[in-house]
Image 1 (cartoon, rainbow, N blue to C red):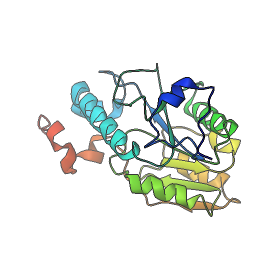
Image 2: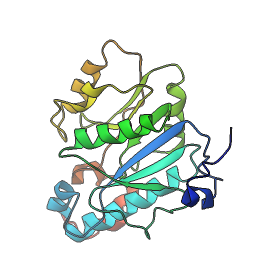
Image 3: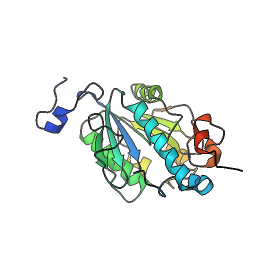
Length: 225
């Protein structure tokens, strides 16, 4: 093992200190192209577009920091278009575009592509979780050694991480994405599967999610509630 694919010149040129070509672990990172006035709309409704934009960029930087040294291949899936020169270093992160009419289809397509590329353990995360750490992701991959699935429950009734060793289409179907029913419906799909549950963590969607967290206070000085 350890042999790079010779027919992929661009891949050959990448340093493999962080992303080892012979790793059978794949991390999918779903991200929204950061643009003022887009994204984090529920948060922006309270704190304004600029503050929500600045917080999202702060969370993106955090996600880069906790994933760049992960022992796994890493693919960033952009929502709108692929940006070649941004915070996601081309030498560390492969870059793809999300494909599909809703979140479930887009995630399913990303997982299927990963399994078609012969990765054995695949995990997906978003790009806006301050509570998430490198150790959390490493532990999720370790959990897949003894389980076929791993789920990181979010306090809002969704999940912040989903991983698997085999593709299960039902996980991406008949979900009301962005609501408090997603985790429950997902776990129902996994009722007869071997599943590891990670620690429940706080997602960042509303002002109430961040108002008491010190890391966000510099972004909230203008708020008087």
